[in-house]
Amino acid sequence: MYRLNTEQQAVVDRAGAIAERGVAPHAQRVDREGAFPAESIAALGEDGFLGLTVPSELGGMGQGLRVASAVLDEVAQRCASTAMVYLMHLCGTACYAAAPERTGAQLRAAAAGRHLSTLAWSERGSRSHFWAPVSRAVGRNGRVSISAEKSFVTSAGRADGYVVSTQRPGAQQPTESTLYLVLRDDAGLGVAGGWSGLGMRGNASAPMTLTDVGVGEERALCEPGKGFDAMLAILPVFQLGSAAVGVGIAEAAVGATQAHLTGSRNELLNASLADLPEQRARLARMRIATDRARAHLVCSLDAVENPGPTTMLMVLASKASASETALEVTDMGMRACGGAAFAGRVSVERNFRDARASVVMAPTTDQINEFVGRMLCGMELF
Image (cartoon, rainbow, N blue to C red):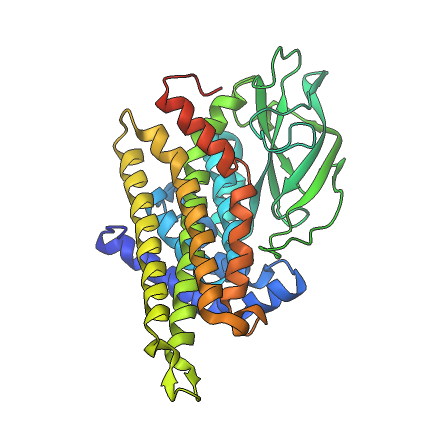
């Protein structure tokens, strides 16, 4: 469905092979132990996929959002935790790429598999309104000092670089923010708690604190006070990437349910579970819903590549569409697989839990519906 050319398809095929041998074998343990998928990220990095969207002149693959979405889909089918860590890395490197003269070393390191990035935007004080930080930088001798309580940071304590949002000194409103690169070893940066989620248990989405973290102008990833604009520029990467993860989760549930129905028997009836018409119908609905969500994602990719009046609406709606589909499909998978799924003997149970993350991840489905509704009514979004 992604309509890739030969070169692009080869990249996605390679990613699928890496995901199968380097990600899938760790997925069950990552979920069971709530362990960060270090081996899976290393497998992607060793083959250059941490540099998937890094410009080729900086050593990366130079691929765009269409290929990135297809790759995220492949990874999410094996391990949603790894896919979310990878998505946030792609968002982070997209922020880096907006200021290559300042982040060239990090982009080259990412392309070589030696640098993992992430976003640190959501704050305890503004909750899911990630675009409106309540923290404010303080200017000191040509530098700024950042103190903030970030509520959910994927790869907390594991990433090498954090794209941090904070209000500029003297800001009159929260959207007057600036994005800065904060590195793992910077003084004053720390993990402020653990992570034990219902799903995506390996993505280390823990709170972090910044206490008087000092950075200079060379760490700014946008013009002072233009962080909100920079966030909007990154929005398609996150929204469509999140949609791809949701579609991948749904695809995994379809595959697991299909395998269970065709591979299990009811001895009393002397029949395969697939011989039951209601089970086949349920599997068909799962397949159709997953294909529909992936088609919506691809239409959104088309809209980004060929901007028009509906592009923002498509970008916003893509995450809600895929997230809600993943809920629907994994729920049907649980019903189809019954006690085997409930007992965790079928991987659809993990898919079911992982699917719950996206609907409460900012921007939540409720927020997206509000944004889309405002657009349809001719109102300002913010």
